[in-house]
Length: 125
Image 1: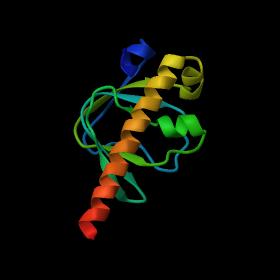
Image 2: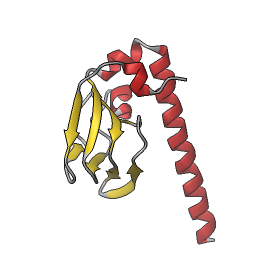
Image 3: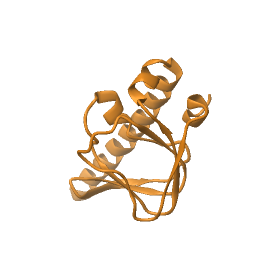
Image 4: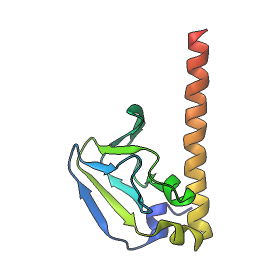
């Protein structure tokens, strides 16, 4: 099964230094960022949601899929390189393979968050 990086093909790269804001919560976007290297922190309403460092991880997919402003802020914790898919909604709509891979990534995140939330509930009991 090809990775998102393989599926999108040759797209521009963008580099961020440590501390740079990759995506700002509430800002319009429409671009899909695929992590090639580095680590980022994701926050929503100034609350840390998690960190992402896995190569090929998608960032900005929720905004692209839903057609809404960015739902979280993403900050580079280390120097980062991303492959950037411009007009991601069109690219996603044009490829069943890309759509399926993004759906798998979202399902993995949801499973992790559900597991983490349930563990926290049981820890509090």
